Length: 121
Image (tube, rainbow, N blue to C red):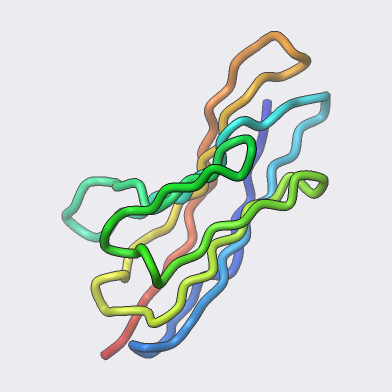
């Protein structure tokens, strides 16, 4: 089983920055295809914020393009989300997601536990 552990959330004023990290680990060999960040605000559905696929192909939600930057450190199995010029509308629980194969056989799609990001006005 692949586990994802997130860190870096917190409270920041509007216009500020935060950097989230998510590291994948398992007790056996595994590969990672796509790593992504989703978020869920109170009373709203979980939405895709950004993702990075093999070959460093990225895409962003329109609401964050130009403000957020996703990057990936493959040897550390870690994905980062640099969030700049934060807005109160960015307040949400941010979840890391990753998929791939374990031991080259079993497909997995796992979620992290979530990290709270709160942007105050």
